[in-house]
Image (cartoon, rainbow, N blue to C red; front, side):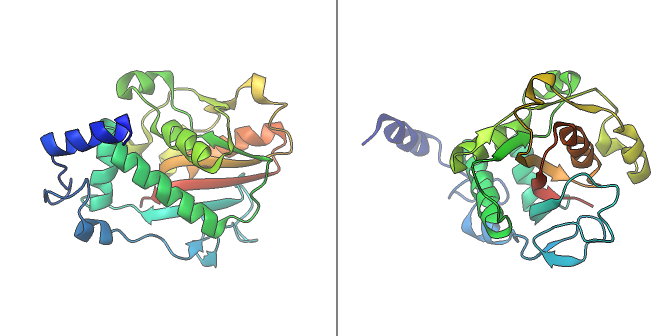
Length: 235
């Protein structure tokens, strides 16, 4: 029996896990609450939202978008089990939730992405220094690092970001304007990303303005293809 396993077993005895949604002593999420989470089946065009199986932008919507594909795991609504999971992941960083999210990202990625090769690089959506000081961690980066490790892919923290007003506080049209020219490619990564396929990781996307601005910056390095992989999409 490994030391890590022994420690985890002792902690489970001393501090039994409770479902973060209903409080039942079982796991971080009991079976009933876990089954209430509906993983996205067929993906949709990120713009017009017509079903197209793998989440690629359709021909009539591709203009003004810099990424090629959006793969989602869940649809995000407030006051749901998923929101409680995301909040606990961001502010308490429970290892079990992290492992659950990575497993879900891996499963969705394997279903809807078809070009997995040595030229794939995983990149996180960046966070500004000001926001980092408030939150302490960039959770998109944590997801991206663990996802890359799980699939044995290269990880590259290739982007940096100017501080702007929080997107969540803005109306849809204002979000699009707020992020313009706010995300940049780090100069030291320009050459190593040339002709690569990028998997851009984020937790929650809404208007897609953030991931589109990230993709715009990445295209400066002559990226071949950009797949956005996100836990969920909000309204």
